[in-house]
Length: 100
Figure 1: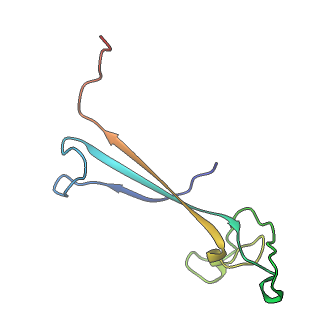
Figure 2 (figure 1 turned 30 degrees about the horizontal axis):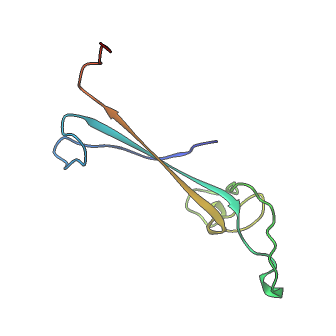
């Protein structure tokens, strides 16, 4: 599975932490847009999707209308299932255990 990194954030020492104050943490969030869920047969009372498996941005600058259109199916990005992946990495200052 492919991950796309969107936000990198390092907690500062003066910021309130949800975890131990002796460890610094790094949060990596990835947003991926999966298969298209647009119902193309809604006007006639049916259900049919186009089979597009993943959002691919059309040519255009980021944030423009063209970049929000899928190059594969032509639908807006909001029709694609949004998957948010979060990974928290902790740099602990404690020595490694010896396993004794």
